[in-house]
Image (tube, rainbow, N blue to C red; front, side):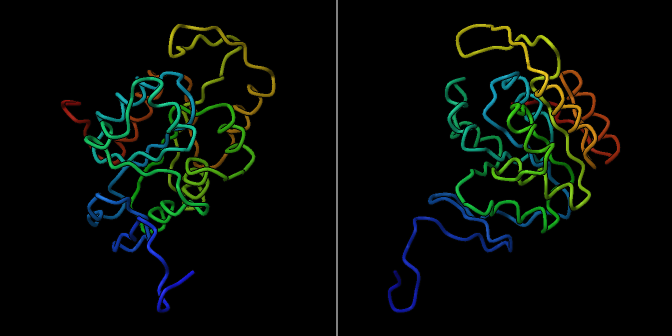
Length: 219
């Protein structure tokens, strides 16, 4: 319904930067970014090395977080709250059916897309070209633009020990999960990693390729 030919107020506003990005109330418009100057870090609904992944993200320069709806549910379970993350990162949430924040890839804002940690569900979608969440949309569109993607897959070994909100648990991924990881390894512009150490090494190589440096402090 419109009033005087104008759409009704929605509580959100459109960022004037050109990406038609929805900005939540109370947040300032995003500043213009230099071409391919930032990292898009996507978080899914996995708690597998979630804290370690975010610790790495905090050591990198110019990182924006892209959260799936599941990530929004999981983060507070691990005592990681969005308002606290906003003090360190620009945070984009999966609030639009068309994945509006993906438009910043077309605006040439990002040089690298990271999905860490990635659930087996996200891995399967990325491996088979399904894009129905903000992280999977970011991954797919980055590949179409030739932007490197790094995916920290959770289920990469026959036995996986992972931290739940209350304890450590042992999981045994099925053949289908392991096969999907292998399929993802064959996707263009995609590098799959299976541990925080491997993720750090691949990020370090990417930083050197771009002549960029890690932050000296994560504070």
